[in-house]
Image (cartoon, rainbow, N blue to C red):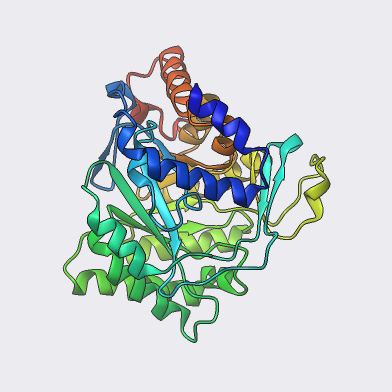
Length: 349
């Protein structure tokens, strides 16, 4: 309750200032936070060779530089994703670049892959005790002459410290980055990363994070590439450039990616469309607009083995995680399922 009250106070600050303050508080308090209570075993999920205590993950963007993954795990997340991390540090786009759409329970950001680079992330991740599942989201530097080579570089550097790697080709805030979702570029990227993985003798799971702003042809190409190159999963999806007509905030005209509640319908539709294309051959992670157990459950029924959230956490505080897990349990019981795994993809059965 105290942490949720603190979240309310932080919302009085400008969004990026509040975010930095939150990370600072978490760094200081992390050793004092109690370990989370064990999850109900009915919420456990096994995916790409990893055993998740529950399917609720923290999406990339909150902990860009791997500062507080263990603190966030203590709030009850089943897994945490750090990043996006690029080879070299970069400051990102000019401020202001983060906007709360409070009346819409949404956020618009145009951060631009601001991070302190792979060397600092490697130092922090190598120093932590490997408890809990921590993934690393990787990207390319904005001014890189060879973005595909950037992905290989950061993969090689951070692979030893990650439980999985998320390949982010879907941020709308780095010009040209989403072009890597195109058929030829994506084949080149996935081919290089899977070859690199084999060369270093790793079996580290690779997941591709895609945009929700894609048409049927793009979904076909992405599904075919993911299956052809043998990666383990898709994260569906990133923020959207679209602006639903229901938005009421004064910031609706700001450039950048929209996240939060208005993204739920679009992202879930794309999730279901990808499930229809790949079936159970790939693990799907559902992201976008989750702020309740019922919404997390809808993603799971649409084909997600795991889900992630971030924006709702900024509005509701860390108490939201326990609430979602309680609601998930109730929904499973109501539908006659014994475990989360039984509910995955049931909308397609």
